[in-house]
Image (cartoon, rainbow, N blue to C red; front, side):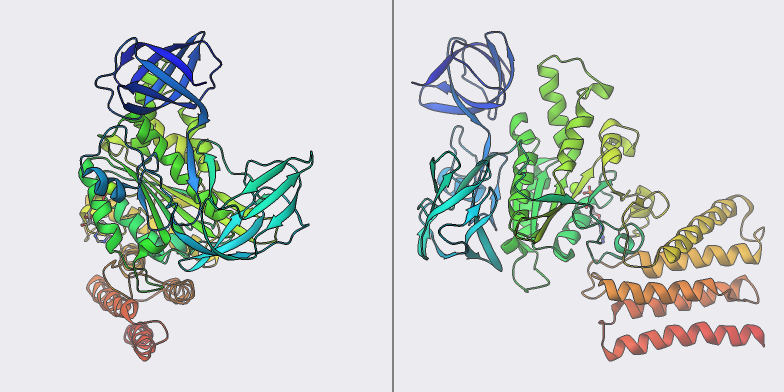
Length: 578
Ligand SMILES: Nc1ncnc2c1ncn2[C@@H]1O[C@H](COP(=O)(O)OP(=O)(O)O)[C@@H](O)[C@H]1O
Ligand SMILES: [Mg+2]
């Protein structure tokens, strides 16, 4: 028998229903209008009353109407065929949905994200009689560039014995591929399709490891100065238009990961449309084909109902954890988490909870922390490792980093890439501020060189500030040279031309070599006759270094450009000594 409740109030997307059979916090319910069933999530129980947040426009819902409780949490469907998809927060495949109901998505229409008809070539990876646990591999099917593991369902507990396993062949996702027996002798049929509650982390690994190895993004200012670790977390706050989305697109293309999951929470509807248009056009530098082949996009706009917006971040991180469980490195990009936090604020406001700072719920900090904790590097039971690296953007109003979302995020992430309006206005891209940003992770170059570079940048900035007051004439030659050196390091190394095929992506070895040489040059004091001579010198050096950046790694042009930089540095020394 269906568990039914009766609607007693409707307030925006929040409905309250009375019920008589048991209900569960966070279970999914359907609000019913005639033959429409609108998906909702139970977000609070008070006595006999259940508050539900409807994932869609609630027009037409009425007091006295019915709610059907399902007893199931909001889940994600997991299995082969997810890569390349664009889905909404409830994992409805948007392009399929559009094909069925046009671009104005129909209410109450939900589609399965995973194709039930498609057949996959199954290869067994375990044997009858094996003892297995949740998350262990039973078989695999090829998907894109890698083997998609078919795993013991994450919800099964304890040891299980493989009683039956198919030999192989072409199978659809709902075909039974294995039968397992648990410790109590109960039998479980396994298919390639899993369902997992999006708000619960998948914890089917052996142990969590400390993220220590750099995840190379090929963006110099990140890898060299403010690295992100494989399985680590980073926060990218920045005002509107500072380059958050472009930076995430660069990371998605160039970061050394297997799978990219994008949670696109639009500031405006137009931005998500942009993401949807631009992303499929990005080419994968590794394969030359579409980057979408190893990407999943979960998107929503601020015009979508609040609960769907809230859900999208959880759906995205669940997909990321699923691929990690296959021993893959996953990058989860959340853009922007501020929109997600605003959804939390709206829900909390409707529930009339006691608000915290700036009307965000008092539990904002713990929700943000729980989200970033779902990232991480894990050791699987078969000895392989998988990782979910999370990079979340924050768009603080007026660029004020003191606001609650930025502050909650900064407490839990391992790296901070602050984008500055000043830098983006000056078109110094990527506009990551080298003075404010930080990272707790080790990078691709020696720490002593990083410390030197950061000190130089700071001291160059002090001179620049001072020069604003006393002018160039009032500045000592030594100080002026330090200013030029910092500008040089910024222009010739930290800034990177995203549109140049070579400069746009700088490998770890290349960064180590170039940065090492730049620091060596900058460390040995360069004598200059006067400020004009110094200025000319750094102008030439900047030009030569930029050319070097555009020369392909390992090519004769690379060696020639490197030679020019070296000789330029030496020539001036000769002049100065003469
Ligand atoms: N790395 C970059 N290289 C060149 N142009 C950039 C770069 N980053 C941002 N821009 C420019 O700034 C604009 C806004 O960037 P965007 O990432 O959309 O900002 P945000 O997401 O912070 O609002 C882009 O359309 C582009 O013209
Ligand atoms: Mg953006």
